[in-house]
Image (cartoon, rainbow, N blue to C red; front, side):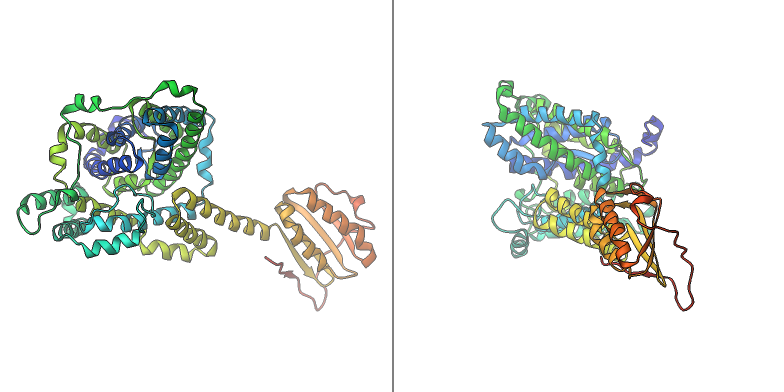
Amino acid sequence: MIRRQISYYWRHLGRDIPAGIVVFLVALPLCLGIALASGAPLLSGVVAGVVGGLIVTWASGSQLSVSGPAAGLTVIVAQGIDHLGGFPAFLVAVALAGLLQLALGFLRAGMIGAYFPSSVIKGMLSAIGLILIMKQLPHAVGYGADLSGEETYIPQTPGGTLDEIFLAFDAISPGAALVSLGALAIMVLWETRWFKPLAWIPGPLVAVAFGVAFNLLSQDTAFAIAEVHRVALPDLQGLGDFAGHLVFPDFAQLANPAVYTMAATIAVIASLETLLSLEAVDKLDPLRRIAPTDRELKAQGLGNLVSGLLGGLPMTAVIVRSSANVNAGGRTKLSCFVHGLLLLFSVGFLSRYLNYVPLAALAAILLLTGYKLAKPGLVVEMYRKGTDQFVPYAVTVAAILTTDLLKGIMVGIACGLFYVIRANFQAALSLTRNGDHYLLRLRKDVSFLNKALLREALGRVEAGGDVLIDGTHADFIDHDVLETLRDFLKAAPDDGITVELRNVRGLRAGDAPESKPVPLRRRAGHAAAVLPLPH
């Protein structure tokens, strides 16, 4: 249940405000970087982040999910701007995508989120954790790598991410490296019992304060942090100046059919990413709350509608910022709201001060978040659960690392479905033998996929045997299966096989020639045995 009482939010205020500050510090460079990588105006990313924090937060039923521009939509945004002839035309598609998402929410399409296997969701979290570590290592040592790829392993540049890591370690900035190491040490120590009295202050916030202090004290020394390795906000004079830089949609493009195609593409992909992120955040929530998926689609639709009208990028629920929120101690949606407020005021009033924050301090926060998402203990836990859990988990991780978030998830789901079908395939029927008596049990759903297995079972009945076919526990029997049984019933007398049917819906007693009751009693010298069937 999602609680809304003021007292509930007041109770967690001490955790939520510092967590919101941390999420803001993580989100700000990502909002700017994603806009830059998309070929959109720089402030459009901030607009989407503000709308996600101030509007989607309260429309959503999730307490911890953070919404904003997503790296997974970068390519679509860049292609859309180019294809539609400019950013104002693209904004029309974003607003229309919001309306489509609202419709999906009212049509209860959010139920799709319940069909993502747990092993695939955990694989997604681990893959994003690894991506965070690999993408943030260059920032941690003061190398100017791509800012935008929070959820994408393959960078925008021709070189691979691993190449960037190797290049980064050849160009280490001593000051940035010290900041990241110091910030990591602070956050790790902050979780120990020695700092328990200060647990009300999030470790990541202390780490950022350390980075700012180091930056100020190290100026004009060999450890000075270059401007390129610090947060860079555009120089705006107040919120009025911010509003003056906004771009608005060109509604004349409503006559362009390509706008509607782009809107449908954004709506589908943004909805899928949102539902995936929501499932993942629910698993990370320390209070184990479950967010309503239909309400989330409506909230995202409202957010994209407003973002498109105000000149912002399309948005989704984003797992990286949501994970940082959980890791910083956030407990309610107030932390997400605080992050949105700070994004709004930062571009107008705080840019001068925020530009002192080293990227290495933010990288340290994301490195630790990445480790917690992909910690080795999770791999061991999934391995111990068996092949049907470990293989989809591992395949999802590998697929996301080699493609992107959505493609990797689809591959993982396909792998998970294989194991589900395989398990149902094996459990659909069993054959037990006791002397020359056979019991063929049909269980659960027996579909056409089980036809080959059924033929294998019937082929093991020896001439002169007695067979009881029991469908008492079968919820569904496919027509192809019934046809196979009818063929067996017609051919059975030729081999002296006697058949009895019990509760096999779709077959009548007359379908079994010369049928008679078959007592499955144990004969001397024979023990009942379940005959193994092929996988």
